[in-house]
Image (cartoon, rainbow, N blue to C red; front, side):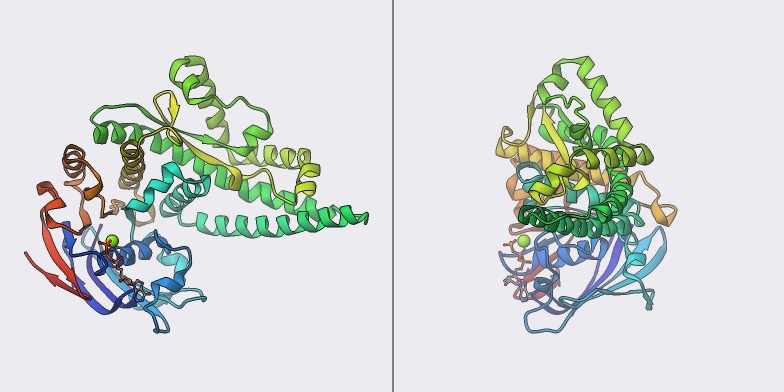
Length: 405
Ligand SMILES: Nc1ncnc2c1ncn2[C@@H]1O[C@H](COP(=O)(O)OP(=O)(O)OP(=O)(O)O)[C@@H](O)[C@H]1O
Ligand SMILES: [Mg+2]
């Protein structure tokens, strides 16, 4: 798919901008702080309802304006679809599909994007939350109905955590604590949580070969990238979690890891295990006022050869690993028909990535993505855009976006 038209009103620094885009590579070039990232951020927002730069939508609305509108025409094969989102800070988004009001969730999945940006270094270096977000966003792009499951899980988690906290406080006061409501929350947490665990485990299985290939391609064959799922339910069940070194050296450890992850892909069985684990850790949970088992405590593990990437990989290696994760996401989406029957290939967005890579990695990346249906690239310096990605070019300066061939 590709975006043929993009229009923004009061989004970030733009009062109004209208662009006609084409398939193939397009570069947005201009000095720092001129609005290049703002443009591609808007495109990505239409596909995920989230920004790679901020958690709250308020920053997306132009300073002083009541709300922002992002509108795009998305072409799947030859069929155009008009998608529109109105962002009002602090309120739910309003969506329109082909000019008719639609529920935001019906708009999810119409436009698929994969965005790679300097912020993605967090995927390798940051907390598990960044990696969970990576998995969950991709999972929702692939299966939009899981957005509702995720929202439900978050709600149950919040309420169960609040209950644990007040139960802990009551117990410390010496008051009697009625735990019957906790049983209800346990059941809901286990049922919704198991669906997320199963979807993530399945997704990791699909990503794994692509991550290995993409890392080998970007790095020129230096090091083997291997991803895995560390599930809190496994830890609660005392299942052995092999280290990167064991996985690298020991066939038995690898076979065991595959078996453990396979077991996570069956949601009903995971729900039973979660329920049992929650009962077992209940005392601890009440004491700490925290929910200790469930997908919110899980992680995507990243190994490079015998070592974990986090804490060991160099800057360049971490960067290449993050890139490999995004490229793998791209491949998984591309190979998936999705809700649209055909043409699941996402729009690829590379925000400011070439300046960070050495010339060889830059050329390799360009060659890898040059065949994509649409690639949007931002760069401060036109010379940083590799030749293989020469296509349409826009200059971005002082709030103006000007086509330059
Ligand atoms: N909500 C907003 N209202 C008004 N201006 C905003 C808003 N959010 C961001 N900006 C402005 O947008 C500009 C940043 O734009 P953007 O991040 O797209 O720059 P860029 O061209 O990608 O720069 P760089 O090359 O440094 O990455 C900043 O000057 C910032 O002040
Ligand atoms: Mg930028």
